[in-house]
Image 1: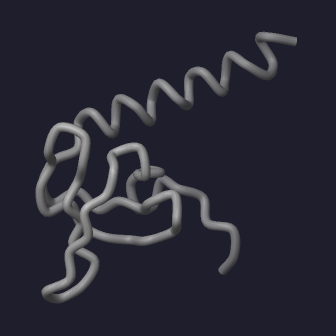
Image 2: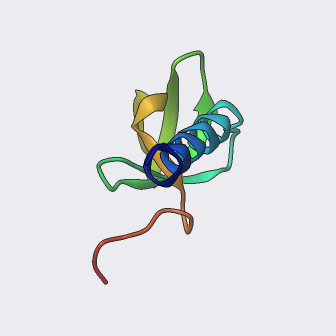
Length: 76
């Protein structure tokens, strides 16, 4: 049971954490809320995300769901 259910989940979490730890300016990401943007800067626990012309939002690194294209979208 562990090998079928928990091992893949653990591997996914580890890969996501590694991606978050290696974020850099210019990376295109998607947040857990579905916001798409480009990393403008990375700080200790936060990321400044450029989501439009002259629009930037600061969010916790834990809100990053993945890189654009890597995250499954539930729709179109």
